[in-house]
Length: 447
Ligand code: URP
Ligand code: ZN
Ligand code: ZN
Image 1 (cartoon, rainbow, N blue to C red):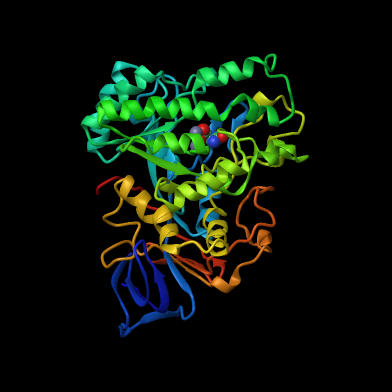
Image 2 (cartoon, rainbow, N blue to C red):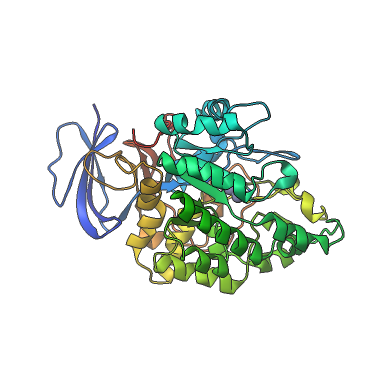
């Protein structure tokens, strides 16, 4: 049995902040109150003048996913230590449905790979084929704790797209069994029409990636998905929302949940004009500064519910300049910088830190059925937390990263990295030094 007492930290929760002591025994929080006497054989961490946040739950990562030309650059083994360094104690990743596989088989394959994760890890189930046998698997998967499914309204060329009618059929079943449907929401027809004007996608400038996937694509898709959510009574989670128009449309539908990502909040389409602009190619594309300011407003007025990294990184050599824009691997890294850059932004913009906790911990826990043991600092919950020195805000953090990647998008941004990170009671980052953490736990909704 191990005891750990954290004293005098300002504990920032979803609905308030207070100076508290936290007593942790093994994996769980035992007590949290203004003054706790240490039991015998107890390590004590003095958090005086520090801030304590719940561990981040990143609802959207892609560790080692297959793409046309290989795999995204982080595996669970390489991506999860960098996640921990950024205060992310739980990641939710996605299965990959290979041809001929059942959903259960695709899930089992992914679970095996996720066994390398040092973060706790949950898996959303990707549905990229529409077949009666696939639909028939959904109720049983939900019963066994895999209650979140993802579909795509685009990527037809990669054979991953479902039509809106097919999505409605999937949503009907998921809604009947109280699951949640996640949707990559860019209308394929809008993209096809916009791309036609670029004579087959031979342009190499990355700005064409943005021009070929206009904001209208998100608006059209969200309109259709909002209607589907109302007709099927299924909660639909819009992943990586990125436009002002899409956000305004999403607010019309009560069953839509909205996620955005750090790159849509912190970066803009201007990045495509840099000499390394191809590194910023992800789908959906980066947008205008006006779009990102609308997203910042959406965070503040509760229209956006979560922030996920959509961590799908590539190294410099994976995205050589001069590649035709349609062949540039899509995706960017961000799991390690997610919370540190956002915390710095929240401080600089004088935004409420409880809101940051809701967006990065308690809301993803509630939406994905983990909120009876994760997402808040409460007695009986997993001891997932980070201790932050607010005075350590700096732009000079790049050399401290644990990433295996040779590039990151947020150079020169302010960031506040945690000095201590605790995942299920284990001190995985101790005074900024990474220990050798044990493997993460496989998570299921509701258990
Ligand atoms: O460009 C991105 N975001 N790649 C990862 C897969 C996805 O669409 O989320
Ligand atoms: Zn996507
Ligand atoms: Zn994604």
